[in-house]
Amino acid sequence: MRFDIIPDLVARNSLKWSCRLCLTVPPAAPNIMSLGQPGVYKLNEKMLLFLQLTKVGPPMPNDQEPTSVVIPIVYNINLNETTVAKKERMMPQRATSAIFCADQQLSRYS
Image (cartoon, rainbow, N blue to C red):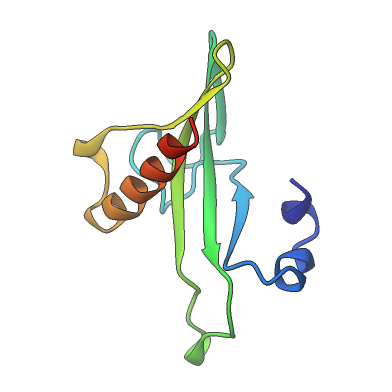
């Protein structure tokens, strides 16, 4: 949360990625919910939220946007467990490998 509030800390700590909580469902997100809907959704004991990871580095040439990935996260409040929302048939092809890698990293720490 601290890096989201003060983005300069990401550069000062030499981090490779910055993380932001999406308040609405962004266009780059997997097609789980409609665009523009709230980015944090709670149903019973589970919460769906979208995190946007953006690669930090030197400025991109020709005003290009830096590499960015939106990952849908499901947080189980009762079990205190975090997983990546899985709907393979709805995921764009370019995001599938990045979301798979994020899922692998989360499963290593659970």
